[in-house]
Length: 437
Image (cartoon, rainbow, N blue to C red; front, side, top):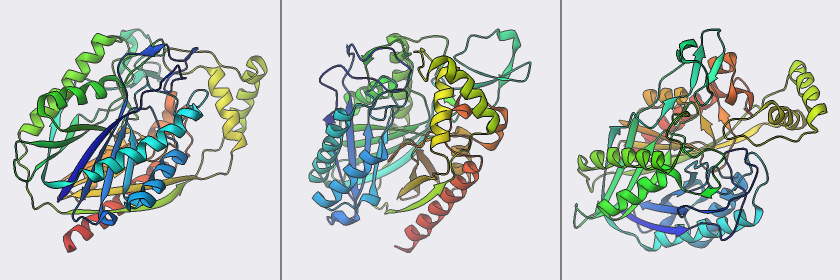
């Protein structure tokens, strides 16, 4: 197998609006630089058989931009667009590449497309013979299940101040698994080429009050791993829709460093136990389908209209979450877009008995765990927020319970069943193909 890596700086040169939180002001500076890291894997020097994974230090990515970067890469160096995964790390302190809660930074997004093409091309020029291995570790201190049941039956988010004596407990569990793909040079198993690591988390330790650009704890974890091992470290997020940091403590740079060190330590321990092999096979495929969009009920629309009459569609900044003013404007947007199905593309890449499967949004953690448990591969990891963004995909159960992410979802109740079925079908297809080669 051959592999190559590259890194490119994607830090904005001036002040920009930031994604992830409802902020009142654009960025005021840079705490730490933002990067895009690329890993290209191929079984031959023929790049039409290569796969690329790119980790990007932004909150989310617009499908228009990832499609443009993938198509341009295909035309320029030959890696098919259907074999390129471009994934946001989901830092909530990055530039507004989508404009989730406000204005999208169009100039930045255009420049980002160019930089993504460049970093993949550079990685493809750095190909060298490698050995590859994979393993799984655990990290249980960063992510917390964020949907809490109150004793009156309603759902409280874990960042909302609420009397602890009235909290019954979390409505689910986190996914603590840390997946690691270790790539070393074929001539020297001690020489790291890449560490691709996956963990389900919400990089929003810094709240909406923060106006400094930052790659958050995943970016610092990457830098710590590169300092320890050399090579390129790439973080890809998982099915993180129902996990979060502890919303009521350590919301500062010290807390970010704590989380980064914890994640880097888990990756380093796992990597140390992996013995790479030169015999691992590379295989993959992609699938496209649609998810029906959510339909706003007459009751929801009447509620939204009453709010909109008071706010005029303007919503206020908040350090965490959203208010009724934002939800009303969001319902209006959904009402106007009613009937437009949401396109989904998933790419599955398998290295030996370890599979990575992409998804363009924030899958609820329970859905990711279901996919992983039913996968035919020894290890399976979801790469969330990849090749576009369709928002949260809740479980049917969670939609019935209702809360923050259920209120601002784009998908209808059928989404969970469709995604699970499509993901498992793709995984089984790639598993069958990998056994035939």
